Length: 209
Image (cartoon, rainbow, N blue to C red; front, side, top):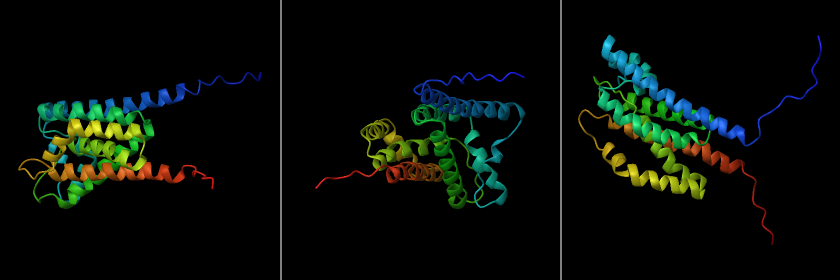
């Protein structure tokens, strides 16, 4: 065997963040595609919506993972897909790990909060809790990071989705306002975990006296 001593060619440093963002955006799109695929299967093969979150039913805990992919109709799905991709794409600019962690925290807190507080005998489905979490994360991120870009993005999110967020938190029959509320709480928690921690680990500013 002949050993090749030629050094491995690495991509330029500026290309790596770009690749990471591409993978993050791909994750958001893949999740949206899975939502549509599940809805097609639900239409053709039977009722999958029963796998949603069933409050305080141990068997309904599986819905914490399944519910974001389940929707009552294609109209319901379309209404969630557009903001999911738009807000998810903004978060994806922070990289694959960022969008994955935010999604997991929002889904976990949103789903568990709904399972604990939702009315008995109901089934909660839909990605709107994730959407509320994404929006809340983008708004809260600016408050924790204090970066002008993050604050500006948060203000734009409030301007575009603020009314929808407020209306979605009003208790309404047939609407999982619990999912919206706890999804938003999950987004705030994600912002605190990711951006307050970063602020703590940043190098301290040395003041001269």
